[in-house]
Length: 386
Image 1 (tube, one colour):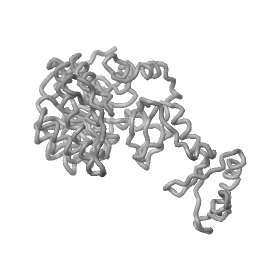
Image 2 (cartoon, one colour):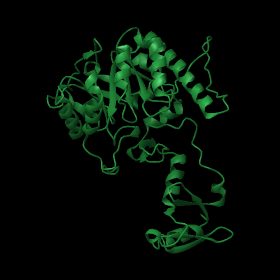
Image 3 (cartoon, rainbow, N blue to C red):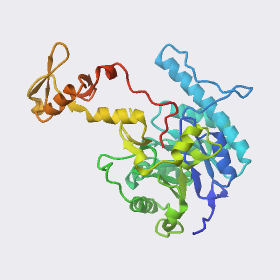
């Protein structure tokens, strides 16, 4: 197997091995510090990070505000305090080895003030900001204010091109790397565009090569690309190492660090992850963000999938867009209009006991039993997205 060569990240030689940041409070100062101590790049998540009292006990994030604004301010305060503490823990555990990154989600509420709140206090302990979940144009400007590197997370060369042209070209010297998060292989929320089919994965090599060509066009030939998604064994990526066409490449491990002794997740989940089969991972669109995400199949997801399959569009008035078939629902037999081809399916569900139609904001009805109507599906404790 090819040997991995170290390269400089923020002035220090490190192995091109990156811990993927996982919120909420999963990638923390302990995991990031241990990863950095081993000579790589550790990442803690600043999405609802844990914080502690003076005696070391965990501070539960309890919200006392009566309004959404008041609770939002509490959330930001928790995140800033937690981010500061996790940065200090990471530095202590690492012993000054490797590099420490902080991961944030651009579209999450309060990201900008949270970044400033943490970096103003402990910016010298953090060497880079990784940021995705949207188009983080301003992350470069924020990183520049504190003199640290930034690492945008993108899923295509096209996305990076837009970021570069609009903002990053003004802060080129602090672009530490570009994280390519594969839409089909990566865990968590994935950046699938409307032009891409979630059921037809594309070869990551070609997409990363396209990203490299875009970067080279701006003179970023030596800026590393971090491959994120589907990285478990380096032996599977031998053709990428020392590849002149791809240029400098680092590898981000997202799921694998979940199995370490430093990982705070329950042992039950560690055991589950160790025994996963390929069919146990579901690429689904149930997140309230609207994005696709990969998750481990469990009873909660099974219930959501089955509900989704028992779903038809409807209209309150006949004739619109072919909605002409009458469907009577409820004790009063109130008439709704569905497409003729959907009527037999809806009637079959009703006859099978799925007689309650739950309306959605998207103009559809989901058919469930009367018992299910009054009981929303509940996830198991510590549900894990990988």
